[in-house]
Image: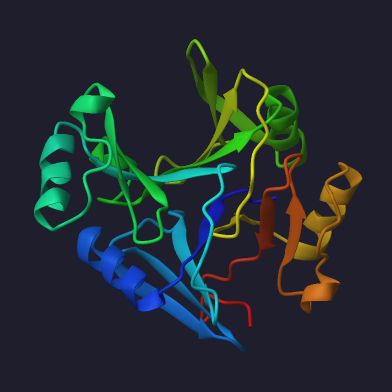
Length: 265
């Protein structure tokens, strides 16, 4: 299984407003678009993104303009160069982005803003060799049992546990595929010690993992007892979906680098 995190999908209430926000403030460009029956999907990313860099997928469903950002979904994180966090945060403020959590309030280590739908976006400092400016660094989801969550990703997807941060009330765990390129997006699992449960909401979509062979890798996941949520056959053998132990949706997708479209349709 390839295992690369291919994209993260967020639902938006106003597609044009969201596109303008990401294109203006994060300098993203539209990579591809699919107009479906009652919905539109747009892939976005930095102009000079790595071949294994993750895309941002924005999905808009017609008639859905009141989306709920649940607390099971945490945030996406984007990269800026070391030593320039404050400068880039100030740039966003000068462009009219709402001041949510500035670098000073985060100990100078990171900062947060929100997009038009309230999706949280962390800004993290990285070496320029680790990915293009504003490229996706990681996606954070919250889990109710850290041992189960870590076991799910290490057993079913063969991810490596690459780091952790333990505080008084919570822990963060970072995972990536084995031998992942520095430019690849990581997965961050957040576990709060107070035993709380979470609401998915409908503004949070899914993570997508690249596979080498959709049918074979799907069967391998079933052998490893991954939930049979939406199998390849039910999706015309173009993609499939499983779920983790908390119900986060995970898409499986073969990526043909020579295809005319980023979509398998």
